[in-house]
Image (cartoon, rainbow, N blue to C red; front, side, top):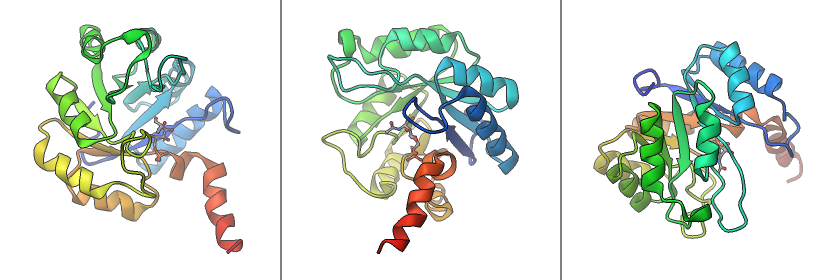
Length: 222
Ligand SMILES: CC(=O)N[C@H](C=O)[C@@H](O)[C@H](O)[C@H](O)COP(=O)(O)O
């Protein structure tokens, strides 16, 4: 899969149950639209959405399950249970939160990567800082991403991609870097590729029409 998405765009097609497009059918159509537009891969949430998407498009898929637990802030594929759900699908890569925060049930990140590999899937580390990316690489993740930058209490909150972080990662990290999070425009996307990332994931700017609408409405309220 990593070869297939090299230098290309991955589109995240997600709508949780509090979002207007929450529906596996609609996520399948979003993925089809992404494929028609030239995307090389899809990132998707839940086994139901992934099964539907993989029926409709023939692109490789990064799978996640978002679930909250009372004893942890981690919600992107937090435990082995969510990995097991993803293993029922044909997704080629599984992304999990690889931040330096306590996991639910005190599960260990190292064990989860090994578990994913034991089932012949690639493992992607959703990180928020440089240190987390370097740690994820050292414990065997196949690629690292900036997905959670700005979403942990200790990482830098920006309106767009964290270019300095990406630049530093490209220089120091040996595994592929996937830029993800707040890539809001085609110009942002061009810039992260110019910095040398392996691939990039765009979500909301393509697949969350409520957010896209907000950006247009905002200019009228100034
Ligand atoms: C932080 C978090 O929960 N991120 C999620 C991870 O899967 C998704 O909600 C994002 O849409 C995805 O990362 C792409 O980012 P953006 O939508 O900014 O292009």
